[in-house]
Length: 183
Image 1 (cartoon, helix red, strand yellow):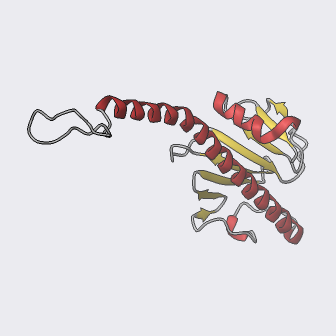
Image 2 (cartoon, rainbow, N blue to C red):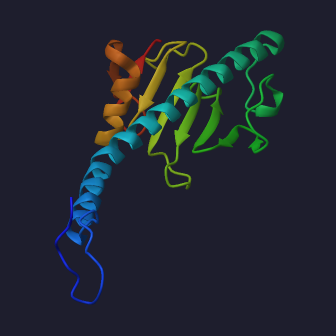
C-alpha cells in the first residue's frame, strides 16, 4: 500500500508508524497512575516481610536467652553472652540490624523487643516483642508475641495482619494498645 502524504519540506514521505507526543504523554500518565496505586501496596508488603524477619530474630533471641538461663540460672542483658550472632554492631543489650533495633529487656519485662525505625533514627514508631519468661505483672504470657503500633492506622492494620485472627488487645503497654498472640 502506498502512502500518499507528502512532506512539504522536500523529498520524503511522512511515516504513519511514529508515536505522537500526545500518545506518549498518555502512556506516561497511565504508568504514573499504576505506580501510584501499586507503590503503597508494595511498601506494606515490604514492611510485613521485615516484621516477619524481626519476629524470627526475636524468637531466636528468646530461645538463646532460655538456653543461657538453663546454663547460668539467670538471664543476660548482653548479646555477646548469647550463643547466637546478630550483627557486628551489637553492644550490651542493644543491637542494630537493618531497619530494626533489638533490645534484651529480661530484667523488667522478660521480653526481647525489636523496634522498627523507618527513618533510620532511633524512634519507637512500631515495636514487636516476644515474651521469654513468665511475669505475673503483665497479661502477655511466655511464648507470645505483641505488636505495638503506637496508634498509627497503617501499623494497626499491619499488627492485625501479623497476628491473624487469634489476637487479643492489651492496653497495658507503654505507648498504647498492643496486639498479642501465640503463633
